[in-house]
Length: 309
Ligand code: RIB
Image (tube, helix red, strand yellow):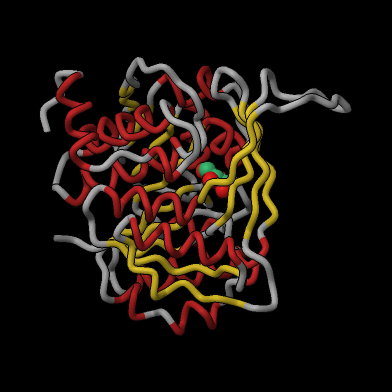
């Protein structure tokens, strides 16, 4: 079975449930505050591990209770954590998330240790890249580290997945080496400068095609996802009707389902369907990693929607 390495962030999420998201200058009361394990890198590793795939994580945490908690939780999700570096000069990454009654959220991140991940750290863990098949990255770690990992992965002919989240000014050279570029509506708008994406999708793709020729997957939340392969035909894959409680981590769960499809040799449409299903299940529970499905739950959900697995 193909093996995955995730290079990315680990955060502790401070989650406040509120009736509605606060406006600028407004003070509101939350009746529910909780801490959850998060960070796009660690979420995606957990989501993949929970689906029964062999996965390693490379990243950095501080020498504190939060770093310890994140590592412990990843281990419980079957992630090999030996590539997570503990740095006693910095604190673990933290995010502050407000979630409204419809499951919409806002997220503010303090990168902490994630911002201290270096090219030397990657070199010390290089074997975890060379010996695996799929290398998965997001963008909550320094830009030079992302480029370095992509260059090593390309050199050794790995399958590279880049989740363009959050949107940063990644170089065109780095992007051009990626096999699957996964982004949401906001991120593709930031990357291409094309707004009102639902109406202007062709325009955005045309711009991207100046420097990127591989697979594009755009997640659209409750409106499902679309994918574009190299013939530029746009294929829509609907989402599933569920009662959403908290959308935090749904994009990360999507990637878990998508990677499972890839590893099981499914076509890109099925991979996107499995991603949509994993994302939908995640929105029905509070928190990120605490809501990811295992393989049994994912396949049960797909069957209940009459989708073969
Ligand atoms: O994708 C969701 C994640 O983004 C949260 O867990 C938070 O830590 C931020 O990194």
